[in-house]
Length: 544
Image (cartoon, rainbow, N blue to C red):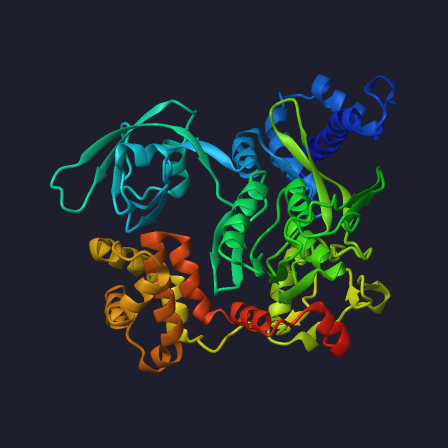
């Protein structure tokens, strides 16, 4: 063991003890005591070693740097979701949870070393001064950001800032010979967590939630009101690829679907007494039939939603087995502006199951579990999934569900691999569909902007040879035409092209109605809703 290691290890352990004392004090303010007060803490070997190093070591030791580099390693010994958040990252984390930040109100992407405006938030700062989709941002204040290999984080740092501060933006716009300059006053910009809500047919609404933030409940209710006013009697809630987020937000939303007193979940930990959350009786959407879509990337709050709907037999869960995160984190601020996100409890669905998957083999193995599922072909067959019979539970109507490994859907839908090919893989890895769609939309914006909905754009593009244009574009980018691969993947390529073009013109209400044409989980949900298949049918026919 070298000299540097001998110095660092005692410091790390001692510092972790010091951090634990701080955490204990903070937690004690909000709940029952967990750690002994500092004044009554018994001296221990670790704190003694730290004092010895600080007072007697031959050279000065930068403990601040050591703390920042090693606290994450210390916390890795606990569970996969306990984490340290450095002070410089706290603003971004808080913005994610609050659901807003201060900036200029544009969605952009960096293509061919150019920052291109994809969407301008209606009523936002950029919209007010005349920034348009398709504009290329060349300068921000005195910083040149075109042709200099600029990174996404750099652009965000330049465009975001405190509310009411000003920023000068220079853009290049098609049809103008000179650079246009705009002075923009930053303002609060919402981070949207509900991507879209629209009617699939006369009786079925669709709502897509990409994460759960503090603003999600209000967004969800606005979307639901829109669907209800349009005649929705059935609802498809898409939680696929939703990593979770705010517990309070998902509890509020589930409360709108359950009868008074029905359980939503309970939480419990060694130092956290059992806390039960039951429905308050709002039940605003009691007359709407519910179908929830999940996949292997649906986690945490998404699993709370799906588990509550499933265990109360309130609706059907469709898709593939969810991630399996059933741990509750409490974010505890530290004195220097940083924070620890500490796991304090497990959550349990109404049937009493913990859906947390095992992390006994370490964090790497825990997150590698998704790859193991793919290698076992789980995404293709429900029969490949083995649950522990000792973790068997019953829903309200007596249906069997399992804990210990995510939420297993009521209706399993395998991943669709029919359109895969080596050709598609190459163009997908280079992001060529996305970049072509942006360029096509930009070049044809005047014509495409005349269409008000996805169906009209879809019909227009069906009469254009967009696929052939794309193949030529891909060839220019180094991907040679592959007749066999193209034949195999042409449907998925063409549909994605149309969906991304529509997104660049009218946003998510252009994208989702088109992309569902190749979404077999969505198609299955629509089929089930049309057949009026409900939980009662599953119980009666013993469909599992």
